[in-house]
Length: 451
Image (cartoon, rainbow, N blue to C red; front, top):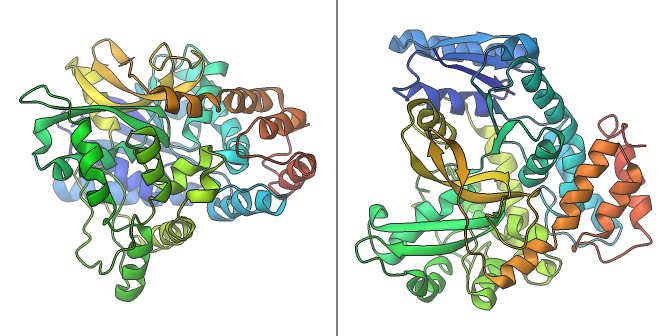
C-alpha cells in the first residue's frame, strides 16, 4: 500500500484535483490518502466528498483525515503540499499595490519583485515547519510543493533541509503542450521540446521534429507572431465570462475552449512575451503577468490591461468554481509517483530542484525549473542550454533568492530591506525601509517573526 499525505487538503480545489489524479491511477489503486489541514471543517468536507466518490465507484483507495501532522506523516512515502496563509487575495492585493505607493513599479505581486518577497516571507516559515515534520516522521518521503513563490520556497527549503527529497511542481509548462503542435501543424507526438529557467521565468530552450531530428525553433520563431498575436488572453476570457456568466477553464494540461471568444486584442496578455521573442529569440512559457515580475523594464512594455484582467478573472474563477472529483490527470505529480514506484523511466518536462549544473552560470543552491528523468533512480535533472541573454536576466535573481532565504532563516528585517535593494524591480532606495515596515505591520501576525 502506498501512503500519500495531502497537506492543505482543506482547499477543495487542491483536494478534489489531487484526489481525481490519484483515483485515475492504476498503480495507486490501493493507496492510503491522508488529508491534513489546519482548518478541520474544511478538510472534513474534502474527506466526505472523497468517500462518497469512492463508494459510488467501488474504488479501493482509503481516504482518512489526520489533524496531527506528525501522525499523518508517519511512514508516508509521498507528501504533496499546497498551502496559503491568511486571506490569499487580500494579502496578494497588498503585495502588489502597497510597493507601488512607495514608488516601486512592479507589474504584479505574486512571485517576483517585492510582492513575491513578502509572499515568500509569509509562506516559507509554515512550509519549513511542514518539512521539519517530514524529516522527523517520514525522512524517506518525497515531497512535492505546489505553493508559490515556487523558486524562493524551494531554494529556502533546500538550504534548510539539503537532505530532503523536495521538488516543486507547476503546470505553466502546459502552455508548450497546448500550443507548439498546432502552431507547427503536427501531432503532439511528432515534436520534442525542453525548457528551463526559474519558475514563471522560463523559456523554451529547444524543440525538434521527431521524425527527422531537425530543429524546429526556426519555424517557431517564424510562426509565433501569427499564432500568439491573434490568440485570446485573459482580457477576452474575462469579457466572455461576464457576458455568459460562466468561466473558461484555463488551468492544467487540457486544451482551452475559446469557442465563445469574439474579438481579440493584438498579442493579448503577451506584449512583453512578444518583446522577449523578438529581442532574445526565445519563446517564454508564460504570460506577461508572471514573466514580467522578474524584469525591471517590464513595466514599460507589459500588457497592463491583460495583467489586471488576469487577476480579476482568476479571483472570479476560483470564487465561482464548484470543486468536483474527476478521474482524469490534471497535474504532473501522479506520473512521477508512478515512475518512482514502478521504476519505469520517462522524461518529465519541468520540475523545480536545486541547480546542479543544469543551467550554467547559476549557483548550485538556487532552485531552477528544468526537465528531469524520473524513475528508479529518483528525480534527476537534465541540463538545458539557456541563451546568454536570458542567463543575464536569470542572474539578476541570484542575490534576491539568496537574501530571501537568509531573511527567513535569520528572521531578519534588515535582510528583507537588502533583498528589496538588490531586486532589479526596485529602482528607489529612500522609501524602501518604510515600505518594509509598512508591509510587516500590514501582514501581522505572519511577519511578526522578523526582528
